[in-house]
Every structure is written in structure tokens, then in C-alpha cells.
Image (cartoon, rainbow, N blue to C red; front, top):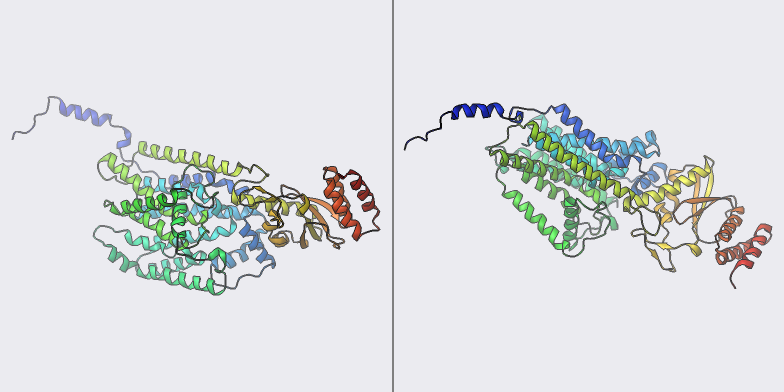
Length: 559
């Protein structure tokens, strides 16, 4: 066969095309300092919303322990992120939320950088690792984990897991990695299985079996240490009760549906608002999760896609048996696996576009511009969703719609009002939430229920019957809630709970009773004012102020 003939001047045309080739074709390396700065900047800017927030309810329980209102649990379970951490930082930072939130955000930014480094170590290009780590850093699904100071365990567990996987090697390195993994499970034991994903990172000529043989000291350390710490929690009763009940029924399917549905959701500003999945999603989402995982394991061009999918499952597996107790912060560690999946897919697209493997030193300025544009668009949309989450309010009461912020804001109002009114003065606190004029509001939905014999009072529940208020306001010597006139309590500082959970100071008992009756009369609640005045006067017949208010209420009350 004769060789194909080229047209005259074809060689010169090829030369001209090469000369006109865009600069993107030339070798370009994004400096590591630039990647680091961009990842930190994007993470901090998008996740800034938690910095001005108050504490979560679990944080208030921790402050009870620090103040001696509750005993510190005697257990090894989560000793690093619980007992040790808060015994160190509470004396330093006190009850100001900002240092706790800032520390969580800083640790999250560190995790983003470690995750980028691990993706590079496991074969991702610099650009793909940047995209995956950036999307992880900006994810709005981290909001509850960054808001709650007690969720520092989620962040710490990922930090030390990433360190262990970056350090692991032969000789002394395996010992250091095992030590880091012990710290990881000491922060939260749910990461104990995650290192098994590293066995799927198979460089050329290496099998999964050989990887398991090389990694077995690290993997065994995670399982044994995690098992010991879990046993410690069970023996100390810390893992008992409804919150840690275990079931292997239909809840497994429901929890996969919820966790996977949240993972892929990019529209709902409050994805964890609803208690369960509804309709076909209960079955479709778990099926989709299994199908996508199977497709990831069919991919043969590299192991990172399989590693990321396995990471997600290994991280969620320990929480799947918890019935009805699936929370958004459970996804903090699993989403690191999703970041690896994103990095693998990004590199796959680049290879498809180029028709060949993408060399790490020739990613191109134009491709970096596209990557930056995608990340920036995702960040802007995430910021919109996070801002919306912060701003949405309930229709019937001035509470945030967000279930995490709702309880936090109710607690902030009550604690702040009492602290301001006492102004450092030591006092015993009486909080009046009058049953006669209070509605039963569901703390989960915000719906106002019909009057029932037994009412649930949001403020009383959020403040844990006053224990959280005592822990936060040290000069509040005692805290008692009442729902009608109660004899005694002379000298106690009385506060009236409004419908929005703010507390109005009424002064000291007994003068506070008269002020409360005056407030009801001024609001047109004449029947309730008469009822309260009658009870107060029966207990204090010589109180002239109560006599006058009783006569006024009697004249104004409907007949």
C-alpha cells in the first residue's frame, strides 16, 4: 500500500497551527501556595455563617458538666473530643460562642487541606483534588457540625484519620499512623472502618490483597480501639437510652435513604427539616445509592472512584442501625469520600476530553479557569442556601425554621435576658410560663396545638428545666419554672416568658405578682388576670396592691 500523500504546504500549515496553539497547551503548574490559599479562603467565606451563632443544645449539656450541674461521665468513650477537650477550652473561652465556632471552622479548613493532599497522594491531579476538596469545604451539609461545639468530635475524627492515611507506610510510619487512628476513634468511633477504603488504592502491580497485608496493623488498630471505646460507652451507660438504641429492621433502609438523599441534594436549604423520607424516595434513594456504588466498582481506569464510594459506605455504616436518630452532622466524614469521587470524576472528564491521561504538570490555564468557575458557582449557590437556612422563620411564632437554630435561638433569648437583668447580681430565678395564656407549640414543627391537659413548654425543655440556665449564668443560684400562681418564693427574681421565648423581668416576688396581673389587664386578658389575682389574694390577703388589682380585674372580667 502506498503511503498517503500530503498536500503541498501541509508541513508549513502544521507549523503555523502549532504556533497558534493556545497557551493552555503549554506546561502550567498551579502553585501549591495558591491552591492552599484558595481552599482556605473559599471554606472560610462560605462557612462563615456559624461564627455569629449561639450554642447547640448538646453544648449546653456540656456546659452543665463543666459547671458541676451535671457530673462529667466517667468513661473512655470519646475522651478526646469530650472530657479532655472541654476541660481544657472551657476555662479559656468561657461561655462566648465565637472561639468555639472559630476553632471548629479552622479545624474544618485544615481537613480540607489534608483531604486535598490525600487525593493527590492517591492519584488525583492537582486540579481534580482542588475541585473535590473545595466542594467538601464549602458544603452546606456541614452547617450543624460547625455550629455545635460538641461536634468537634466529627472534625477531630476526620483530622486524625486523614493524618493516619497520609502518614501510613513501613517501619515507624505504621506506628505513627496507628497512633493517629487511635486519636481519631477517641474523638468519634464511627471512623473505625474508614481506613479499609485505603486497601482499594492499588498502584500498578499491586493487588487489594497485598494492600490489606501492608495495612493490616492500621486496620486492626482502628477496629480494636473503636471496639474498646464503644464497649466503654456501653458499660458506662453513655450509649444507652433512646438516642443510641440499635435496630436492624426497616430503619436501615430509611437511614440510607436519608443520608444518601442529603448527600446528593443541592436544592433544599434545610434538608434535615423533615423527620423521614416520604413516598417512593424511601426505596428509590437506597437503590440509587447501591447502583451508583456498583458502577463505581466497575470503573477500571483507576481506584479513586472505588475508594470514595467505599469511604462513604464505611463511614455511614456505624450509624445505620440507629432508628430515627439520623442527623446531618453524621455526614461530615462520609462527605470526604464524596470529595474523592468528585476528584476521580473530574480527572475522568479531563481524560475523555484529552483522549489521554492528563499529566499533572500540564493541566492548563483554561482548564483551571473552568475549574475555578465551577467551584465559584457552587460556592455562590451554597452561600444562598446557607443564608436562606439562617433566615427562614416559622409561620406561627418568631422562631427559626431550622431545627438546629430553633432550639439554639430559644436558649439564647432566655439565657441572654436573665443574664442582662441580673447584671452580675446573685439571685434565685423564678420563670413564669402561664398555662392559662400559653399555647402548646410543637418544638419540631412550630404548630400551635389545641389546649391539652399536659402542655409542652419549649423554653423549659430547651433550658433542661433550668439546668442550662444555671450553667450559663453563674449568678443564678437556682432556677424554677412555674405555670400558675405558686405560694412562697419571696425574694426570688421573677421573669415572664413571652410567646417568642424572651423573658420579661417582673422584679422580686411578691411585687412581681402584681406586675404580672397589671400586664394581663393591659393586654386585655381580664379573665386570666382575675383568676391569677384570686389565687394570689387567697395566699396573701393583706396585700393591698393585690386587693386593688383584684377589684379592677373583677370589674373588667366578662360576666
